[in-house]
Length: 459
Image (cartoon, rainbow, N blue to C red; front, side):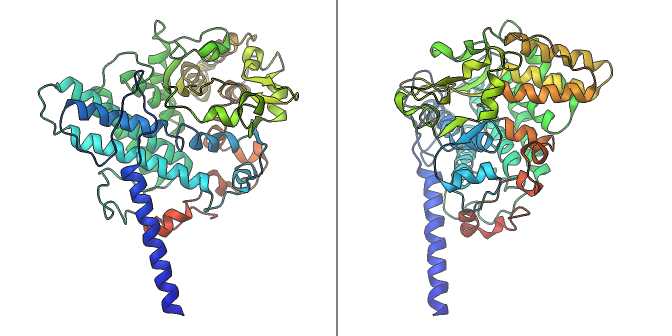
């Protein structure tokens, strides 16, 4: 009996391993970042000329836009773990995020892990292979840009892994065969963040200093560096990189009214630093989760009662109440994702975030920086039709910024991660186990590769 049991366990591990590798290697490019979508290639296809190089980088953007990553699932961790969104469905695995009792068997956690590492694998393929392409039609400038974009996306992917799981494997080579990149132990969170910075530093000089809201440029690198240094408590450098974007007023602007960046089918406005493009043939799964049944959705994610009260308070929400609406049953629903067909962008970085990053890091530095912190905070408030903040002391200003970020990015994946990075999650969300600041390593991945053990504390 014991021998049979062992054989069955080994067989299950082999099956799971094979399925996961196939999903990483052969998954089709469901969505990709292009104003004129064209067919992409899967990871195992050769990269040997200009066309295949360009197609491969679209495949990296496709993985970033996938439903498992910025398309829906990863963002849901940021929504559901915070206090702006309630779950109206019955799936227990979703309720785990709201209760802050996420298990290693949670399918959302596993799906996000697989989607992010798929993105990394595609980026690794581009980084590794495009460098060697000798097609005369692929100029060095074009080659640098493609590779720089792959480094940027890999940096974003590791940034999201670090803030979600903390300690994860750092994989820098393509996964081509089932035995590649197995047995790699998890690196400490600090090392994962260090890899993010390495990739951003490599990407920066390779990318053009142009404005493109749908593809990575040097400015996109600066924006992510501002966020990176905020998370790493390097106030001076966070301020420096946020200022680069804020000072580029001809290209980036807090446009009025608040809903101008998303209403009336808007996309790629001056508000946007980096957003993900979707089309009628490559749709964004967000819409179906937010919209009510009368609009063809499920309304399984809905604004929380507390958030509805805040956003509809004219002294707090201002014009940001455009984020919500009521259905024919008098129920509130989120209206950031509303288009039919579901071509709504996913907003990765907006200029409002850079203003609030600079406000926060100026407040953290205190002293004469406090007045500048209030100016940045008030710029965001003014855009939403609000008067200037009455906060005066450093603690008051920091709390005002936290509250402003809650409303400003209500349906973007910031709230949970903001509360975790400031060690405020347990207090604000009323739970005691700070081990829950990090998600568990998916049980399915541990079954495939036990080098992922030990799991995060508390799991």
